[in-house]
Image 1 (tube, rainbow, N blue to C red):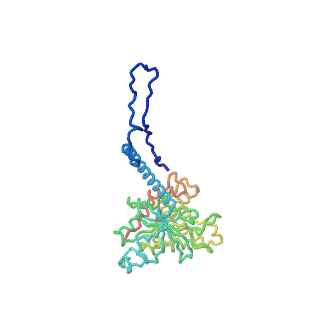
Image 2 (spheres, rainbow, N blue to C red):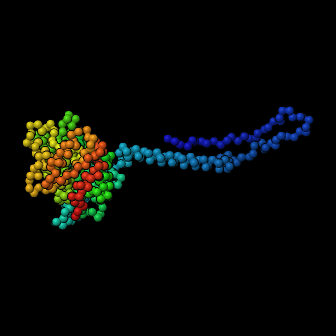
Length: 413
């Protein structure tokens, strides 16, 4: 800590400086005193306890400067301390852990209720929050005032209990959209996807990118749902393919039933599949692709970055029938063969420098084989792109987000 030195002393003032006769002076000269003595002990001083006025006037500015420097230093240190406490999320300098309602009235009432939920017409495209209201806690606050919040969801259909992070763009709380339903994007990570979902962090810029793309007319203002992908870590080489593997937690049901139900219960969403999409990278890209092909009646589009194309979890061993039912190639073929299947839109993006050299040719083969009938695709090959989320997020704005946004709805009433 820097501070002004204390006790600045004034120069010592002597009481009479006698100058002796220089050596070699003749004593024959008439004697003339070389000095005029002052009154005894120097000039008179004010009574003790009263300041010598000239010295007091000299000292006062210095003391003021010391107080000024000390005050500025204290304020600077307080600012640094507050910043450190905010960074390390130490109350009261952070809002992490505080309740977040996302504008939903207390009680999570149903459309047309008496608890403040806006009434809507029977033919409305928007779906008001159905409840029950989840307990969301703030995970972080973005620069535009929006929140990434987290809740623990006990899936009623899968039986799996896990965390889900959510985020809504600032437009969601704009009064002009108070009766509007917003599109939802379920964002799935790669790797273990447990105990966290890396899309919930702000370092990758997914949330701020969506806001930016919307302002540029490239994207819908998606609400994000970011659930865990697996029921546990894959430190033993075990993962679940985001699927219902016999004898294992029903992660497919968790991702396609329970998580959407959570969003409908707590947000103004869109009734039809035109407001529901997935995005994911690597294993999350596979799960996103599979979810749309399995449930085209519920989900309309997906952005799949560096995805696996076929299921490859070791847990499928002995369950060939169920494995086939979760194979995107077979699901796509069945959709093409089925008359009247709803259209789906699949935006792929793959780096040309992926660590798995099969990823790009596998995706290219899928696009070439299955882009027909109700299946619409786009493929962005990222020059120099690697197999990581930092590659995929900025490139979503170079085609994939526009591709799916053109066919989706929202905000709508």
